[in-house]
Length: 227
Image 1: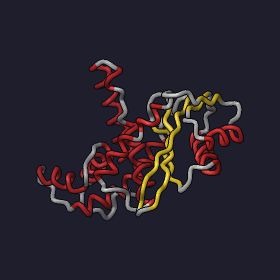
Image 2 (image 1 turned 90 degrees about the vertical axis):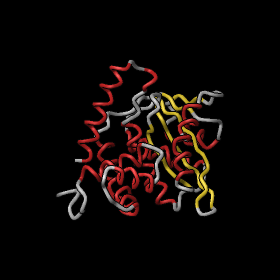
Image 3 (image 1 turned 90 degrees about the horizontal axis):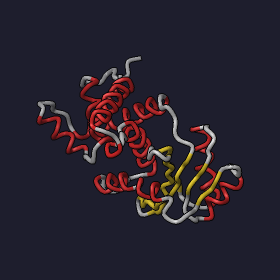
């Protein structure tokens, strides 16, 4: 089945627009202007629809081919206001800073924590050696009932990795002038995480030549996902 059937623009333009949106802190209007500068006239509404349809598709393909996460998960939750109602965005990252999962829920009680833990375990299967959280008691409930053999640390400052990982999507939320619905938020955050993981190359930790090789590999994997 042709992924791009009945789309007027070529696949490389569509995938490039989607990549720009999820990779950088850009709006649909910004991308419209960037494409126009190259002589490609496309409306921001078309770009928005591409991002909805193909962002989710590319993310599924990237997740399917992902090599796996580490054995230590850092877990945190922050509040997100959508249409005047407060929700909680649960996020887990591994020791390399890759986003394991994101999940939007209306509560942050023990039931919500167990639901998020079950999703992580179901999606990513591997046995966890350690989880790091803040002192929210909901985490203790989920840990005790679901993975009691896993080390659970709540040391002060140890969970900074998870707390800081929210900043990228906080910035996007501001550009988007807040999420409009829980469906939109979950869809965007899932695609954003998958694409960010692919290009999370640790530039500050490796030499220039090694970084360039990693970037080539990332673009190769991206090309396979959008083919």
